[in-house]
Length: 332
Image 1 (cartoon, helix red, strand yellow):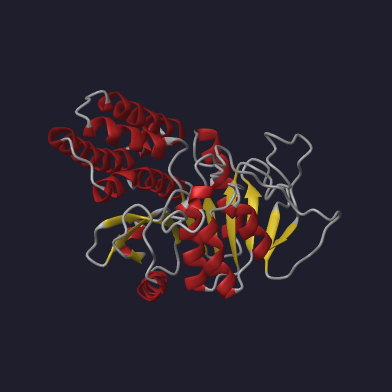
Image 2 (cartoon, helix red, strand yellow):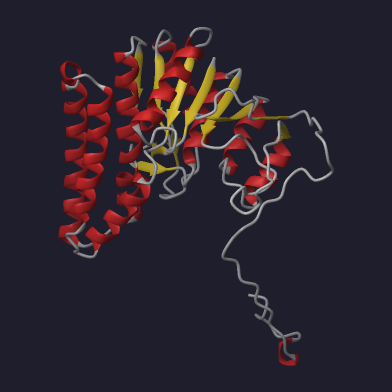
């Protein structure tokens, strides 16, 4: 059993999705697969922008909605022959209408709660997972679209919900037992409360979804497919000589991700660490590259420094003054 996750850049275009199909085909020969997908690149940001505009009574949100609709339809038209599009177009259109209705409600009452925003943000993953599952079936891989909200249960902290591990793990195991002969295509990032209210796991939460499935199923590996060659020694946009590390410990990966490295979402590591499941970071567009293996065992490479990470837009403020010494409340 392997859990493989594809990020927004990996499913962001027709060509990228063709690469994803080939990767899944090659892995399905020897392994049962759970495939977790993010929204198409930039779609979540557009959903946030649309929600904000609608809440201000600005009907220009509809222009963005048309843009999202057009982008997904273009991918469907490019990847499916004309005689095989009707089912996926119907499913997509019904889901899009649901999004349109919710945004219209936000526009009319000019109010956007955290709960409503979580519901809206989940549409990006629902769209991409729906398309990928249909595409795999078109390529003769028996696949099942799976809405993670039915399986991953959380508290009611909308925007960055905390996972309730016991019911979540049991739901995942039961679901996989029922559908043991299919490729399970799962919406990343989204979840729900025990009252079935939509929640999200925080930006980057699709990685976390993959890790939860991996831990629940005691998978052989969790693979995170993205657009870089693994964990890098530094941000390649800032350090041209940066290169990927072949191995990293869970601790090293957590340190790098907490302090600026965006290739992996920090909470992802905890379920894998507890279960001792290795995490592989791979490049969708260079599948032959070994990428980075994250595991408990520390395998040292060349050099003393393992990696550098940075955080932008930080301001350091120093407060001084004799009148502050011993005064209650200054630290706060």
